[in-house]
Length: 107
Image (cartoon, rainbow, N blue to C red):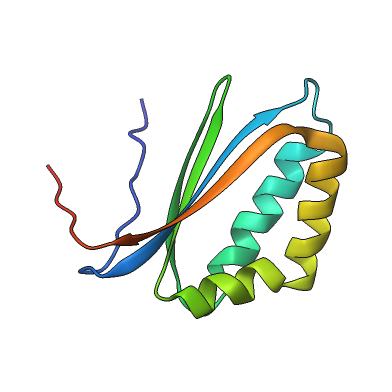
């Protein structure tokens, strides 16, 4: 059994973007687009990692070095296409929260 891997983030402070969503069922094409967006996000300056889980509610947390890096990712032309498609086809509801991580610890 493969163990999930948590993002290896640097020493705080850094930022977390929490994307919580409820999808329509079925959400045809969603998995392929999500994979493309994860690959694209990893290429962005300031990207630090992500963690994601999905059941009835999907939660993806991405980690970033700065608010500027988050703004650039949100405005990426390919990401804008995915956002628009998500609103029109995949999501019943979603919410984005941007947080400053001031402290972290792990076991």
